[in-house]
Image (cartoon, rainbow over all chains, first blue to last red; front, side, top):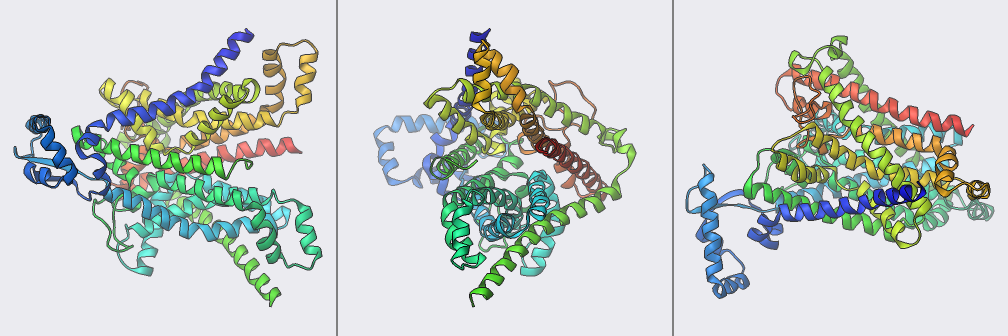
Length: 324
Length: 268
């Protein structure tokens, strides 16, 4: 029994590893078609679902690849043949054109909304954390702490609906532009990560030993000086970790952004323009996509997974070792 | 001057707390007004096809329930491994990976399940949705179990071993019992989180207008239907979406508060 239980527990723990590896391999193999077709240039190509004549596509390839093409010209021919085979199944396509997919717009949309959310949430979250950890008496901090954590528990789809019908109109009135835009998506995302960031920051601020604070007070320091010179330096590492974790969460958020970003594949020229992010592109197009389009969506998913994996492991390994 | 700066900063900080509370209040009040306005008891009796929400609520509970039934035991046992059996690097690596998995974008998990289940089986199904939610739930339960077991004093384990109990007996009968309340709270919070998930269900279970208990077909989901309804042009659909959001939020917050209440009672 002992042995069985131990083996079983080892197996369950290894399941985590297996699933993560499985996600990576599955996404990679599902996006293989798009990776082979567009290569790394996918990241910088702003066109999504655009038909181009096949000739243009070959010419627009980077020089290096063209010279490679000359080397194995026969392989390239096979590629073209394969493309044409596919066209037969695609009703809209003309026989001498191919639909190309590029990831630049959703990638830029994801990064910009995340940045707006961080810029908006960071000062407020710090304020809340300072309030909860240092200013409020215990019997006030406790219920407010719970309220902030409840804000974190509200499902993201609720944030999306509320944002679309109540928050975005106000933002549009204030700054002009469209109601669905980069800005309103970023701000609602900011409201979403706010409680998360505040809670971790508060926890790491609470790890500051009382002795340090008390000695500073004894020297005649004001509360602000204690916070600035004692607590912040002491809990700096945990705070940076919490910011990075919030960043990781904002990058992958789907539903709240889906309501507010406008979901069009155009690069925004100003902050109040609608655009699209990686999760939203997936949410809206996955059902209908097939072939190269679906593979390109998997490619986007792979990019998102790698970015968030890198960011979160960075935060965990370098900043949040001790903080729970 | 120093005192003035001090006052200003403390004031700003208090203001931020008020802003945070303000957002919570704003969202809740919106939900109450819009949700209660379209709320009617018959919503619980009719299915979506007849303008009710019964099938969706039942469906969402079944999906989250299956996820919990799979995720809780596996997660707990994995957490036990990390804390009690794991020695050295491997347990630490799994702990870190589980933390990373907890923050993995939920839509990516949806895409993963789409690739491994929906494509091979030829269509969306309740089964695929439940798998996606289980994957979401697993790392949360691992993390909770791991943390709560770490709070159990070493002396308790030593006492058990000294009485001649096997390690497995000590873990099941002593360590888990001691950490029970904490683990239960964590599990309730995890359940509250996955029952409100939408993104991993979008293309795995999808949703359905009809009552269904058949896990091999598209399965009714409250959250996915809220997304669909909220995007429809008719006022009546949107009202229904608000009512559904209201029910969902009340449910999630209630589970959440119950969890906190249990821990608080124990602390006293």
